[in-house]
Image (spheres, rainbow, N blue to C red):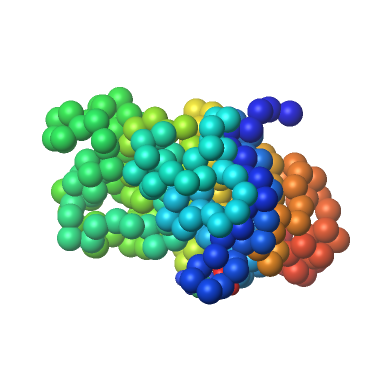
Amino acid sequence: MSESLLSLRGVHTHIGAYHILHGVDLEVPAGQLTMLLGRNGAGKTTTLRTIMGLWQASRGQVLFDGQAITAAATPEIAQREIAYVPENMGIFADLTVAENLLLAARRARRLAELDTERLEWLFHLFPALKSFWLHPAGKLSGGQKQMLAIARAMIEPRRLLLIDEPSKGLAPAIIRNMIDALRELKRTQTTVLLVEQNFMVAKALGDSVAVMDDGRVVHRGAMAELAEDEALQQRLLGLSLGAHQ
Ligand SMILES: Nc1ncnc2c1ncn2[C@@H]1O[C@H](COP(=O)(O)OP(=O)(O)OP(=O)(O)O)[C@@H](O)[C@H]1O
């Protein structure tokens, strides 16, 4: 079992008067892709936002590489090379694809300063970025916007990527492209925590898995084990047998 890069220990999060996370225990092994699954409203997005410091944990600990980041502010967390791709993607529609990528790169101020090798790798993963390089990002299709959002998170080497439901609303062919790109990212041994509702995506990409329900992690294990156990999927996720084939 590889060592955890990120650990959540008994994390509680309140949003205003609402108690949303009720003691989340989660381990994200280094160099692996961990799936975070669960029904709607289980607390997956709240967990990612709490890790990123966008919500503050009211109890418990968030440890990154053995150090507590529980009370750290978001910029400090980002400086530790943790990147977050929110469900709404957070791209700037009026800016070009190139400008969107440049803004995500902390070490480059001008396009010429972007690491060309890394850029070529991103173009190889997401060819649409090259075709639309100088077009406003708002003109991209939903799938292309999602690819841009992920590419922004990958423009510089990151130690941990938090990605929220990248397949949402995408056509199956686009989802397959996205799976291919994330598989390629896995080859670089980047540690990823990926929230998904689409079980096919989870099955294709996950090394390990955590399933949430009602603000807690209720199952942890290998993704391959959950993928084979339809009764467990039914119990944890309410998937009807065979529905996700
Ligand atoms: N800003 C907020 N104010 C109040 N309640 C919130 C807020 N954001 C989330 N919640 C509530 O917290 C609970 C968990 O939401 P969260 O978005 O983390 O779930 P999720 O597992 O990501 O669900 P989904 O798959 O639907 O995105 C839900 O009951 C939701 O209504």
